[in-house]
Amino acid sequence: MKNLSSQPCLIARSLALVGDAWSMLIMRDAHAGSTRFDELRKNLGIAPTMLTSRLAVLTEEGLLQKRRYSERPPRDEYVLTPAGQDFLPVLFALGAWGRKHRSGGEVTRFFDAETETEIDPVTIDRVTGAPIGSRPIRIVMPR
Image 1 (cartoon, rainbow, N blue to C red):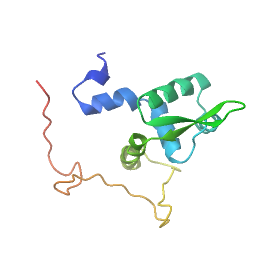
Image 2: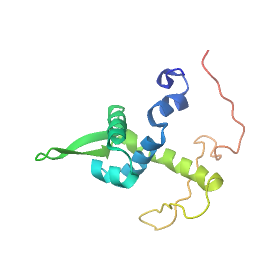
Image 3: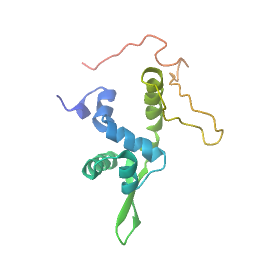
Image 4: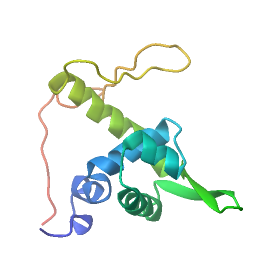
């Protein structure tokens, strides 16, 4: 398969970075306030080597920033960058799709911390105000 990060399609380029489940779940947990390696490993049940590699890519690509919180022993935490903060709507759009097409049984729910109302995300086109998926689209690929 071609290297997705060099594709003209921005969806393909983005998937090259966060297109695996572990990266998405790390970003979800980072948004929930988990910043430390051991905390992420425990919450996700991920192998340490896998977590190390995913954190390295997310840090290298600018979604997370490594910050030292202890000198002795040396310990780092991983905090969201502005690019990482901008990823939250992507997670919520994926969750909304899952609620519609993959739900059943108990599911994780997300609430606005100030209003205590459950979040029901809608992705809209800024120009038309129409919900994405409610109008026909046309995709133009570079030649």
